[in-house]
Length: 417
Image 1 (cartoon, rainbow, N blue to C red):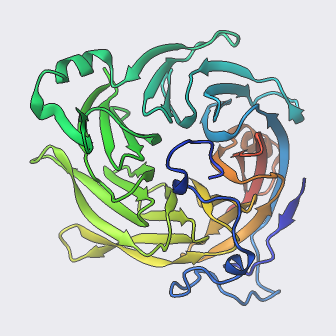
Image 2 (cartoon, rainbow, N blue to C red; image 1 turned 180 degrees about the vertical axis):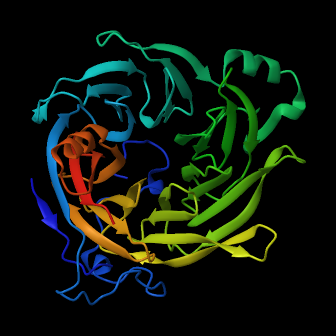
C-alpha cells in the first residue's frame, strides 16, 4: 500500500442480481482507457505546470485499515463513529477516536438485514439505510457500544401502506401486468439525502423515481414518477432547496419544489456525459456541481445568473481528468474534491480562488474499485496545530470503502489558500 504524488499537471462488480448495468465493471478495455474521455470538454487545469510556480502544500497518509467481511457499498460519518454498509446486509460501526492505527478488526455489527445496504445517512439519533430489496429502514442509534440497533420502521410504513391501499388513484403501473401504490419503490433504493432543515428524507431508486418522506413520522409525501429514463444512481440537495439527480440514462436533472404546486418539477437537464452517471457532489454553497460517470471524467458545472430576476442556468466549466476507469463516488469538503474510481485509486483535487483546479494527490492502497467516500475536517488535529503554533493548515479525514472488503482512513493536511 502506498500513496503516490499526482504526476498530472494541475489539471458492477456489484453483487446485485438485477440491474448490473447500472455500475461500471472492473474490466475496462486498455485501449479505451488510454483515450481522452469526452474530448469536446476542455480540461479545467493547465497542461503545462511550471516548476517555479507555487504549489499547494499537502501531507497525507493512511492511518488505519478497517477490516470488513463483505463488499463495502456505502459509508456514513457521525462525529467519531463511522458506519459501513455492506453487500451482506450488515451495518458495522467503528470508533475513529482510538489511538490504534494499522489493521483494525474492532468493529461492531449494529444492524442486520437480508438485503445489501446501498446508502446510509444519519439523522440525529437515527441511522437510515437504503437497501437492494427496495426498502428503507430506520434504526435507533444505541449509545451502548455492544447493543444492536432497533429497527424503528421500514418504509413505506405499515400505517402509510394501509391508508393508501383502498383508493385506486394511489396505484401506479410498475410492470405490464402489475400495479403498486406510488409510495413503494419497486427496485433497489440506491441513494438517500436529508434536507438542510432535517425535515425531509429523499430517496432515489433504480425504478427511475425519487420520493420524499417526512422525517417526523416517515410518511411518504411525494413520488416523482419517471424522473429519468433509466436507473437513478445519485441524489444531492442544495441548501436552497434544489434537488439534483444523476442517472444511468447519462443525464443529470435539477428539480425544485414550487409552493403553488406543492410538488417538485423539472428545472433543467444537463447532458454531456456519454455513459451512466454514478456520482454527484455539491460545493458547500451549492453553486458548483460535480458529476462522475463511467466515461472516466468528473464534470464541473456552475450556476450562472441570467438577468436580474434571480434566474440562473448551469454552465459546464470543464472536466477533471486522471482516472483511467469509471468514477464511482465523489465527496466534497471545503475546497477539496475527493473522487474514487474503478481504477482502485482516489484522487484529491483542490478548487482555487480563480476557479482553477489542481490534482494534489493520488491515493493508492485498495485492490478493488473504490465504491464510496466520506470526509470531514478533523477539528481535534486543527486545535492541536493551533496550540503548537503551526502554520495555517486544515486537516481532513477521508474514509474510503471498496469492493476489496476494506475501509481505509486517510489523514490529509493541506495548506490554507
